[in-house]
Amino acid sequence: MKNFVKKLLPVSLSRFALLSKDVEDIKTNMLWASEARSIHDELHWDVSVQLLNEVKALRDDLKSHDERVMLFAWEGYRKEGESLIEAKKRFFTSLPAATGSLRLLQLGSAKLLADFDSLCRDNDIPYFATCGTLLGAARHSGFIPWDDDIDLGMLREDIERLIGLVQSHDRFRVSVAFDGFVQCRQVRFQYADESVPLFLDIFIFDWASTDNVKIYDQQLQIREAMVKRMRNESCLSSWIDKSCVPATDPNMDIVDSLFSNAINEEKTAGLVCDRCDAKAVVWSIDNTVGVDNFHWVSPLDEIFPLIDLEFEGMQIKAPSRYMELLTKHYGDPFSLPNDIASHFKHTDAADSATESALQRLLS
Image (cartoon, rainbow, N blue to C red; front, side, top):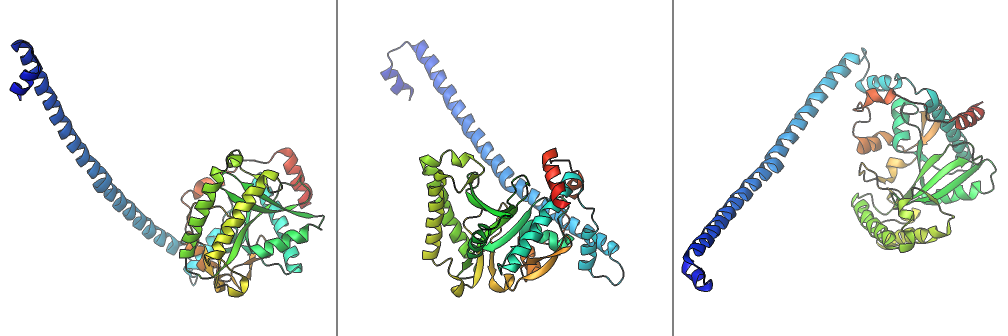
């Protein structure tokens, strides 16, 4: 190697010796770098495999420990002759209600829900409690103390009937908007009086051809392609950064069209269907994708026939097998939230005008 380099570089022996030393230093550094890389890989493997496995094992041990502690706690709380589920129900219904402006918002929302329920019953329009409202009805017979909104579900065709009904009604309105942040169609039932800042969130459901949860994954693929098209539309670039734009905005025509195309793709793929061919109901492609990644595909008998559940002193509609549904969605509906202690640190969120409007409504 030295002779070869010496032929190429006509330099003195002293300079060649220096060059040779530099080459040896480079080789040493390369060897050191290789060894360092090997050490890095070994450390990376230790962290990503061994350490993570240990963390997972520790987490499983803590979960098992918590479950055992809770089992003993519930056994100590349970009264003689009382079942475990009855003891848990008694505990949650005994939790103090919200106070201040949060409770005012809850009571106002409950009033709106009562009016909505009467309107739907009088016109034979089915709806059912979902998400936090269903959990609150099952566990607290009303609002979860730290919750402040109402979640309802309706079949697409029934929402269209509701919209048609309130168009000639002077007390109520249905607002439809598109949320650019999460790319969803937002449907809300409200009082016609815009000074009353209350609403019921209505999530859209479709009839499905099967109750196999795999159709939810197929739906997600169609939705992801739809969202990609939305992001590629230059005229929608400003909408993507907005939380809510009314469907009446002319720029929302293309968003509505993209949703319609996605729904047609679902129909073509045999995922959603007409009522007469339905085996299930599915969380609509119009809704936002839940952070809990719950694949909501319910066989018909999990939802229908609808039943009555108590909520804030009234009866509201709920899925027939609501406890099974809640368990699939949340796990044990009667488990204690990890941050239950902080849930009662409420602050007044309503301004004076809002509070006055709610007081007038409730009086």
